[in-house]
Length: 109
Image (cartoon, rainbow, N blue to C red; front, side):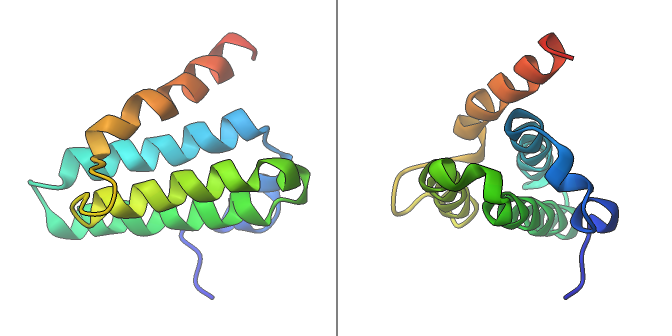
């Protein structure tokens, strides 16, 4: 499998807290939102990277009790990417959810 985040996929990701992981996912979600109308190639690259980070987070055995929430966030993200037909979600609407993790990461470092 080809990884976009090679260092993270090789083990570094599993050293990050859940807040740090979700903040990193949020960065890619935000990037996807910013590029959606400007450059489809950059947009889809951000989507691919976000999905990779979601999948790495779901693989992290520390979050067994949180997998439902993580998987639901991934599902909502996919819905937003595909136009929000299932849940009415948008990439813009996801920003506040992920922003909270970025704020928490900065506050507690």
